[in-house]
Length: 241
Image 1 (cartoon, rainbow, N blue to C red):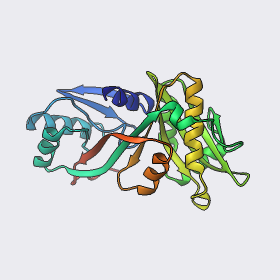
Image 2 (cartoon, rainbow, N blue to C red; image 1 turned 180 degrees about the horizontal axis):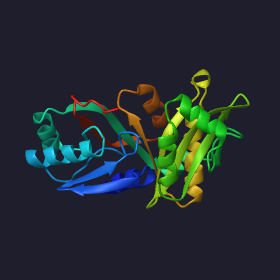
Image 3 (tube, rainbow, N blue to C red; image 1 turned 90 degrees about the horizontal axis):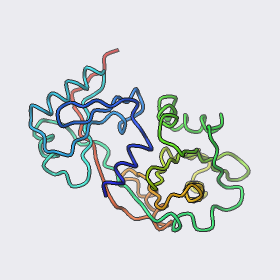
Image 4 (cartoon, rainbow, N blue to C red; image 1 turned 90 degrees about the vertical axis):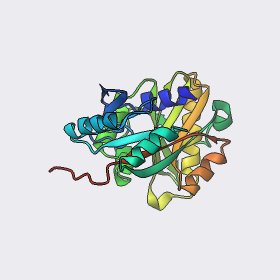
């Protein structure tokens, strides 16, 4: 499933990348864990982990590593070095037609780029601010934002981009007062429908492992878990003002 990792990286792209030993370091500029975590395809030595951590501190970032799939030896090395587990995530995927079907219900989901002010406000209410909007703007093309509507109101938004035929939906947010009305489901179908028109063949989404409600929505669209990852972070990090 190497293609899914490339798609995740390209569709939610770190502003800058640095190479330190066997690690790819991401300079996230406030855009969240995924664009700030170090990754490797190897089993690094303790000294290499320490060097990567020091390089992240030099960037003003908490030492943070992403452990993908079955990287058990890497995970054990981080555990031995004192790094704590944070935010296990499940990657779900399906063929594009399975998710898109006949498209979303009428006037329920609209592709819009750049995002409207009301979409930025919905995201901000969910903690997705200017730094993450900058990540969206800097990610690969084609891309779009999806505006979800229910009860004649803007109810939610999400971001979708395509890399090598794989569309990935990120930053799914629904206004608290309008949840459990099908908006996330409609936005996923709308995002997949848009992606199908831009030649995507697969559709993926990332969901926190303990969010059973979110997984239920995407399972109902025919999506299945295909990969997983978690972070390990320095438990003693104190951000310098």
